[in-house]
Length: 218
Image 1: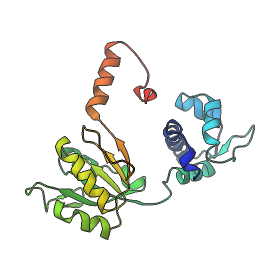
Image 2: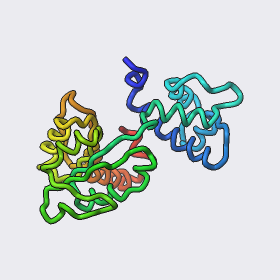
Image 3: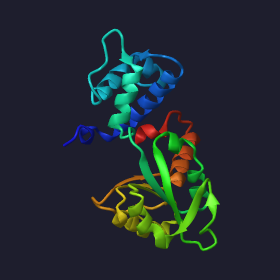
Image 4: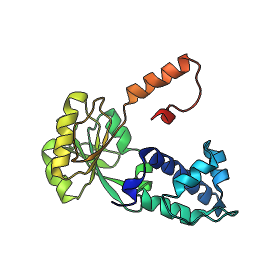
């Protein structure tokens, strides 16, 4: 079992926060950061941060902290962001178009290599620099372009079929925006983003006058 496989899910979420903060500080010209400084910026305890970063490697120095360049390099490696991830988007509606036009994807190492849609009036159009292809081309292009990640931005009733086709074509991970649970067994990894559910939880929290992040509950 690899080191990545032993890291708990909540720790992985915090590691992504540490990476963003470390990259921000590095871009601002800083060279070092302590666990206390990271904690102050992110609202976390320094003990928790040291425990989380122990999964990445023993490169912090007592009384000095972490060298930002090494910290960023190690975090990118453990999170799989030290490579380019070829990605396909299925669904070129408003959500799909917003995803295609989202600049940070490319900067973060996610390259959209193909976009598919079932609507004849969408096929052939160019959105965000991507030409929309028919669903008939999905399997061929996923294999030909060695795509490993798929973004599902289709209606609920089409999501499972789309997921199955992507996995059968060779995709290993899915980011699901459809408001339904995808049944993939152990064939692939799935991360779901249910926007309606998030808004409902947020509205509930606000109605009770509660403060804080709802992400802490995940």
